[in-house]
Image (cartoon, rainbow, N blue to C red; front, side):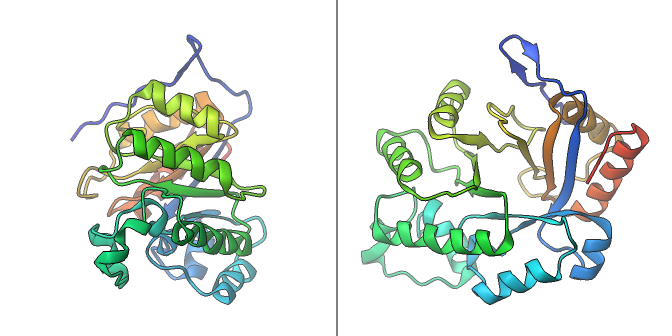
Length: 263
C-alpha cells in the first residue's frame, strides 16, 4: 500500500512556519495510562464518541496526567451519527425507532443539544483545547444536512474550544473550505487521503491506516508526513490505525532526527 500526501496550497503558496510545533499521539490509550504518559504528551479520547464517561472520571484523568499533557476528544455520536449506525450498538445505546428522527446529523433537537452540552462538560473537565466532530460517510452535503450544520455550530456554546470537523462523505473541497471559514471550524482529515482545507489556528490530522485500519505506515510515509507538518507549522498528528502505538513512536523519531520540535 502506497499513499501519497498532497501538499496544502493556500492562495497559491505553501503555508510555512519558521518554528514548527508538532504534537503526536494516539486515538485512545494503547497502553496503561502511566506508560502512555511516559511516551506521549497528546491523546485523543475515543470513548466519548460512544458513551461519555462520568464527569468525575474526566476530572481524575486530568488530575493524573502530567503537567502540560493535552487531551482532545471526539464529540458524542448522537450529535453526528444516525441511530441505525452500528456504532450505536457497540456503545449499548438503545433508542426506540420512533425517536430516531431526533438524533444525529446535527439536527436542531433537544436531544442533540443535550448531547453537546454533555460533551462540552467533559471537554472542559479534561481542559481539552479541541473537540472533533467526525461524520459518517452517509452524511453528505444535502440541503437538510447543510442547514443542520449551520444551525448547530452557530447556536451551541463553544467557549474557548476549537472545533475540528471531519466529513467523510463526498464533500467538494471548496464547500468544505467555505463552511469551515463561515462556521469557524478546522478541517480534520487523514493527510494520506485528502487535503486539509483549513488549519487555523492548528492543523488536525487523524491517520486511519486505510478502510480497515490495518495499514502500517512505512518510513517513507512518515518522512512525507514530517515534511507536510514542517511546512504547516502547528499540527496535531493522531494515529488511529491498528499499529498506532508503534507508528506514533516511529514518527516521533523521524521528527527528532530532522530536529523538529515535537510534543
